[in-house]
Length: 256
Image (cartoon, rainbow, N blue to C red; front, side, top):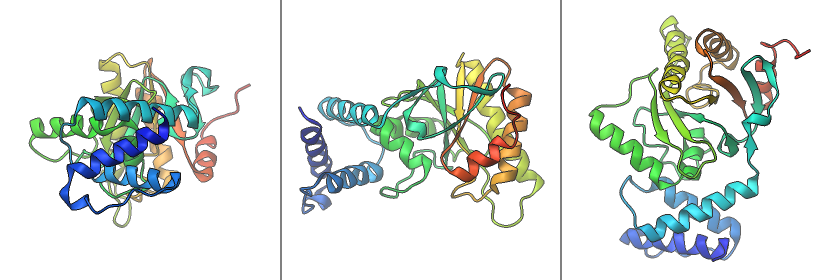
């Protein structure tokens, strides 16, 4: 089966799940098909799906990631012992675990094709990730508190695990409580990684996107917390924007 055949088959399966989508027409062009597939996956509630769908989905997503190109964290150059800085798409990074900046509902972003990291991670991990997160929330019985961490498999991502953490949302001035909660996100992820013998963790820029934590201050908290608590865990600071790369580089001396 080709990627196009998998993509169309997945779209048709998702349309058939929901009677309200029956009138949806599958676009003829690749871009339109990819947009529709991602949108349908993004809005799909956390519920089981058949083995045939999972087989097609897993093959499709892994091929899409391979086409984007996978970066092995073992080939990165440290900015200081045990700490790395890497600019790129976190869903293409092969490492122990990547960190997802989740929301308190913890089952991913439901906005079709939204640009947040929560949406991207759930999209390329596959529908299994939302279901796994939903099971955690059902057992927990309440929204995920800010500053803690939860662990799931990574499914179709090249990393082994995903660490989910909810960062503080900034509505005005940053408070001391906000700073403590952001530090707790990094500390909780490191502690959970150490408990599960995960040797490398890639952190996104937690809370600096939709949650509006100022980039410079967030980076300072991230670096200071990691330096204090990482122990033997290798840490990759993953950035996607030039401004964040410049900010993080300012915290490290050039490797001599």
